[in-house]
Length: 131
Image 1 (cartoon, one colour):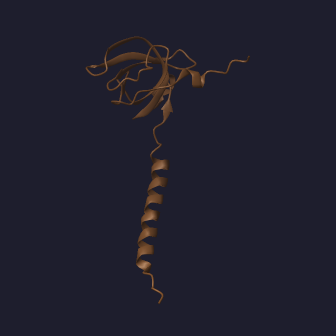
Image 2 (cartoon, helix red, strand yellow; image 1 turned 120 degrees about the vertical axis):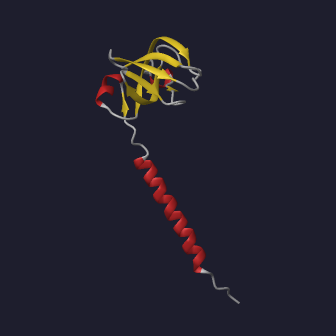
């Protein structure tokens, strides 16, 4: 005796899958709306941005207290911007290291969002030696 399958289960499963697919498409397109800029491009932006550059010193302050203070310079330029950052600091953070932080420019100082600091590994981004 063959059992008749209930189509409601299939309809519910397909509906849930469709909702998840729409959510994934939306977050991948709309969620990536934070522009990536360097210090020389920062003045032309408004609102939250992802700022990338090279740390120039001196690095002062405390990231858990009033904030870590340093300047960020363009990767291939001379333009700098002062940065204030609070939160966890990666082990590889130091002067001369390329980093990215998310935040906003206010009164000439870039205030980074808490725990948004990411360092880039220099070995991955340097040209290979020809041997």
